[in-house]
Amino acid sequence: MRARNVALLLTAALVVYLVLLADRAVALFATGSPAGVALGVGVFLLPLLGVWIIVVTWRSGVQIQRLSRRLDEEGGLPDVSDLPRRPSGRVDRDAADAWFEGRRAEVEQNSGDWRAWYRLAYAYDVAGDRRRARATMRKAVDLESADR
Image (cartoon, rainbow, N blue to C red; front, side, top):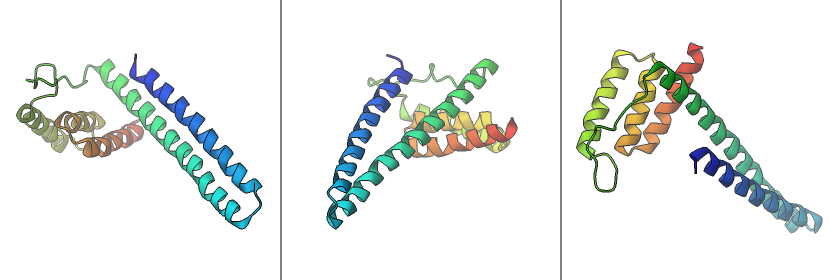
């Protein structure tokens, strides 16, 4: 199953959950008691937060996919197929670190190029640093948006 289809399925399940949660909030409002209304407000904030998270996550995914397609059309997608792997399938740590250093040097030379930042984000991901990968990919998206 493609990753997008899994994401759509999980999003649909989350939306059902958020609707059920909002229904509980309405039921708490309907009690009319101060405690019920206060709890209803608190419970209703959770679906609102959930919708915001869904929108932000999907928007980010669409932006990253757009960059990936554009980079693929240009023939610049990073390729780690030749790096040695562990039995688990993950890239060997030393090889990932060495590959990362090359991507970092590329960003230092071309700090305004979203393509270099995209490849650096990919290198962070290969090295297992998801937090920095996300932050670096946001930088790539911002640079590409300004580039258009």
